[in-house]
Length: 328
Ligand code: ADP
Image (cartoon, rainbow, N blue to C red):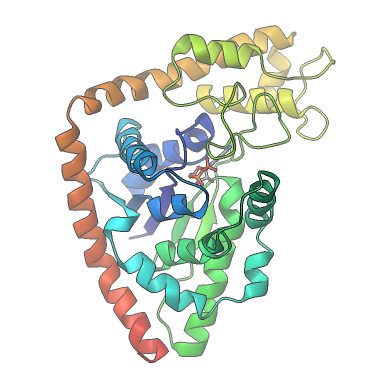
């Protein structure tokens, strides 16, 4: 059976981008067709300035939202990364296979390091090595497929390269994984700045729709989305990024196709109105289940405990094999 692994970082509140780019497919498709593991990757949240209590709270919230979005613990394994030591154990071995040069070429590292420096902060070494830890997350489970949004494909490529290199040098140990991205909404953009992605870690603000935003907040954010001075609704990501983003969001939420939807609308206002309602409808059941789950924190804790136990059982033999292969 195909093994699938993916994760979310508890660095902020989960967004519509996380949902459309990744989480929704995990819940609607991957957990039914594959042996799937989903992880709240809390160690990755320590790569930038963080508050300990906030990381703990956001980890719990992310796990609750993953369940609310439809992950079924009877069908998949849901756990928190730091509960399974194998991730950090394997990461070190992979650091001995990766090179300094390939780490510095990572686009996210360049962007995030520049942002930290602009804020006057120092760049944590873990920000540079974070893709190696991500490779360990994936390789520890002999993962075949990694369903992610577009922004993560470079990191999955690195995991592939490291798997191939390790296997070549030390004998076949890892499965070589591949990234899969959704056809529509693989990169949801910030509503106020369609040149940058809608990311929870980026900043807060009116351009980001959070999964727990109230319907009226969603409507306000979508209605105020930046478009352009044109009038005609056309789908063109290059020259009309704001409108294209709205069309993609509407298509992803309503099951349509962005090009076809462009032909349906005569004004930006009508497009925004329908996009806002489509988002509200997609979020409604997730928010409802989230409320129910918040009333039963013991349940979420139990799911995570059992998930960590199962994950550990899967990762341990793979990581032990890697230790032996590399000469330890
Ligand atoms: P973030 O960048 O919001 O901190 P994570 O690194 O936790 O997100 O990513 C969790 C998943 O959500 C990944 O598969 C990532 O590719 C996806 N994702 C994040 N932002 C977006 C976006 N704006 N559009 C589509 N997918 C996204």
